[in-house]
Length: 253
Length: 317
Image 1 (cartoon, rainbow over the protein chains, first blue to last red):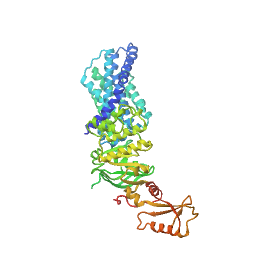
Image 2: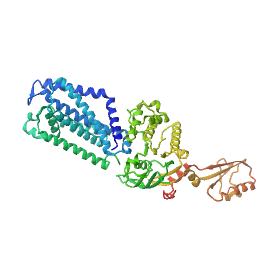
Image 3: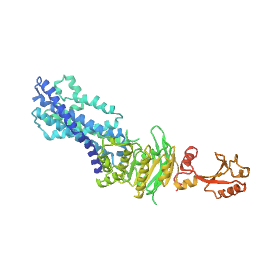
Image 4: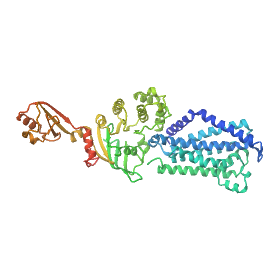
């Protein structure tokens, strides 16, 4: 394993993040605050409790997941797409490194950024609501796994994309709706039975549910299912990346 | 001597069926400068990209320093530096960071002193904290070279290093190449400026339509393929080639006051002595005599326009 190369990629990517630290930091703080104002104050005044948890606290795991998923994807997708766009990918392809090392560097950096933002949101939330985390270790594990698996997914999008438009396409058209409809801001049990069944086909539901379980000890689906879902999704992404690098798809002619 | 870079029957076909390289074989020796000449689309960049790992080969074998570029790619690639034709740089990065990144990417431990030395040599030191987008085109090219040199390559590929750069930078570039050669770095450069190959290369390869037409010592090439001309100028207009000199196959110069004699430098008898004797016999008064040698450019144009491959590449050594 060429750790020097991995750390070079990782540090290069993190430097990009730190250059825009204020923006990276302020934007999640601001959006989280806005969500609390709108959802917590406006809706929370009508829905006081969801399954014994105050509505304000109930949406925290969903809010964290929403940002972590979109940030993991966009950071990883941009991280590998940008070298393709400006042409510096030649250096990655000609360097004495394996694809695994490239993935660890880029995906690791993207996951770190998302983790940072997730943590910022969690801390911001604690100013608005009383948070108690029932299973803190499981919470961290779910958070890490989600950062990682969605960064892997973003990496695939970044390799697939041939334009900035395509780069936005999947996050915008697929991921955001799935996250919103996956129970970020409501419990699935609040839906009509038919929609409850439909929602079960949304993979994001399992992640949010598992993450919420770590906070409050209650979930829409059994936590084991959540773990299984995230493991399956991660394996799927790893499999796809393995295939991409084996064939050189959209990287090497 | 074992070659530092050995290419055996390298072929590359693109998905559309286009055959960019049609069985290129070539050995390059340590410390030499090889210039690959060829028109646009000849396969120069494909050849370099395939050796460096940017495109995959269809068939063939390439080794660098004895390491196969597929099976032992780590060892092979860590010896190679590449300066691409396009100015591919991240616009918002600082010069120092992007050069340091390249060194790390190639698995070399941090060495700020070396990077400083490289940046100074390339007149980039005072720009080290500038972002790439603030630099001029020439400076960006220097950054590309700095990135390639940052990981101390033993073989350096320069893909059209002086395309679109001003005369001063081109001369600087040639000086840099000469210095690298002095350090023992093997350099393969592609160009379509023949004067560049003439100025800095030890050997010249001519590539066209994916085939290596020839590889030869530059001086031998010019000598072997070069034709020389003697222009004999006279004090008075001639009007036509005098009948007594007809057997020499002369041409009348444009001003009508000179005769041009073309001969092969490699021939056993150049015929110069007889010609000058006959000129004296004819009673013509000589004013001046000039000789001209055909340049690499003439040879190149001749090769890519109508010649079939003169030799199988690889047999040239």
